[in-house]
Length: 80
Image 1 (cartoon, rainbow, N blue to C red):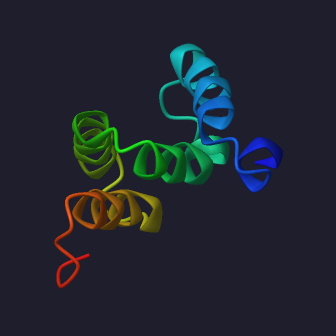
Image 2 (tube, rainbow, N blue to C red):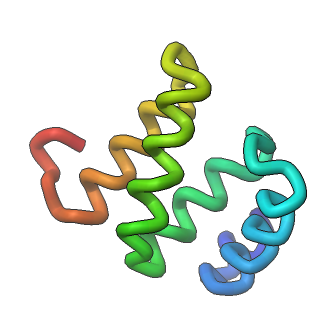
């Protein structure tokens, strides 16, 4: 979170990616991970992550936040 707040999206992405490789469903780092994906325009990875989250946690807000991030990244602002 600190790296992202210091405008280091790549550093935040690398750190959260490291965490997620060890625990793909670590919910504590997901908000920063998703925000970093949006910032870095990693649309394919964002789509895949959102899809997996909705499959795993269909009733959790973080899953739908990920979907909204994806639509924001592809500039579909009306549905994001």
